[in-house]
Length: 400
Ligand SMILES: [Fe+2]
Image 1 (spheres, rainbow, N blue to C red):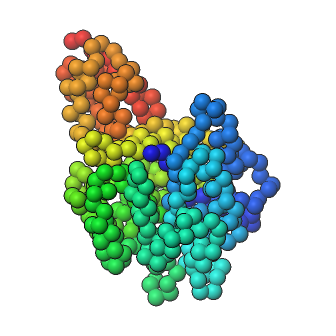
Image 2 (tube, protein in one colour):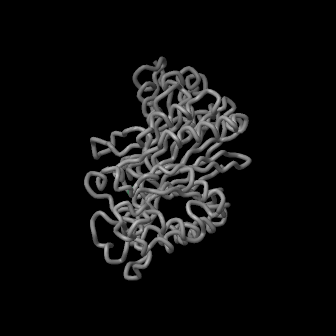
Image 3 (cartoon, rainbow, N blue to C red):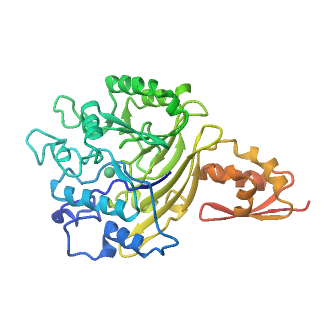
């Protein structure tokens, strides 16, 4: 199953386009060229691919913050542009969730209804199916079951806009009632959970992260309980996809060795101010996800980065995530060395090595870096390892 992930578009009003903390995407701004707009650039980037190399995906996934500061000006056009991208890549549908910027939590644009704009756009939000969308708004989550996947769409902004809870809009939350509802629903679909890929889509991160902006307090209140439910032994293997922090990473959640994979999607269009401007770039992703014979969700991703005036190109590992990355197989890095030693008689390219040991393509880039370290320093025999842009390219067995 292939996902195209577009997070944190932050579509802004024309009047706010020049602000440093707004977005490069201003849907009604006709004064800027296509190359100055990441979404119009993306449409061109997809069109420019050859037929043989066409970009296709089964779903377009949007982990929230489609608009900036709940400005209604760009919402319909941004939602339409996301659907245009979905049509271009032949996706079955768009699946989004609400971000803190999508909800008018500070009541700047509506008197009393912080989510009214989202509930009245067309197609329905967060997905075109009215029944699923109604469940999302009434129960703070919905579960889409397809032949290959179970997809939970969670609203971590459900209480934003309440004047009774100070600073509620500064973090995510899942309530005890929503946790119980999720647990009950999952307990009724154990067979499906153990035969399909399981994905949870939400806006906020489930546990604090070490981003370049330290002191993270914006995680989901109740996130630890959410992870504990997903990590129940009967509930299969999970990939969580979130946005919000505009900083990409792949890591494994707290819990057992079957804890959820957490994929943090960087922002496709927000202006990256403070330290983010030097540590990451605007990004979008292709994720190929499948169920490993062990039952684990595994996948390979492709990351692309954008710069104003430069358009889209494959990612650079110095900006947080390599252009090709894996996830899901979490063997200790050094434990691969005996298999690699058997496979490499003198020299192998990474592609040849992956043909010999296919699970290596599902090893995370953090573990790949550790593996390269162990191959060079601790292996017996020792290896020469070449790395380019966050990936191993070739391995040479040294004669000692
Ligand atoms: Fe955001």
